[in-house]
Length: 196
Image (cartoon, rainbow, N blue to C red; front, side, top):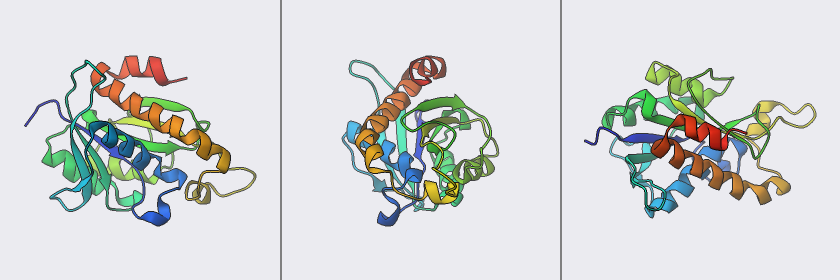
């Protein structure tokens, strides 16, 4: 097994009823990465996730092996499938990348970091609990705060606005670029390029 394999997990909820929700930005980004690899998602033998295996590299570059994953469980149970895949592929937490929505960052903005708290995000909480550490990479895609007095839980489980949907493809592409940069050039360069 390649010592440098990375596990890139798109956080979201499975099924068509959740597909357009802000909480599912992680799924959209790993879909973009899978299309760059030219491979469809397939059921993994653990039975708990769909995966794509291959290499992600900018043109002319070389990159380590990457496993893209979409868990078949709901957000608050995503840690189990993440841990199962990390164990199967022998990936340490430091080479796990979680792509997720972030309320405290403006829509269309990215922040990439290693470690940190869960900030009330049930997916991150579940991964931290299952891996036994919070020291994994996060690609945080901003969705902004809900308008007025809308409950944040309702907001993340609602569809993007029509204005946001026009800009969403740009955020997805940028987040996918950030993942590629992270695994090929490291955290510092990725933060310099994408954290604004």
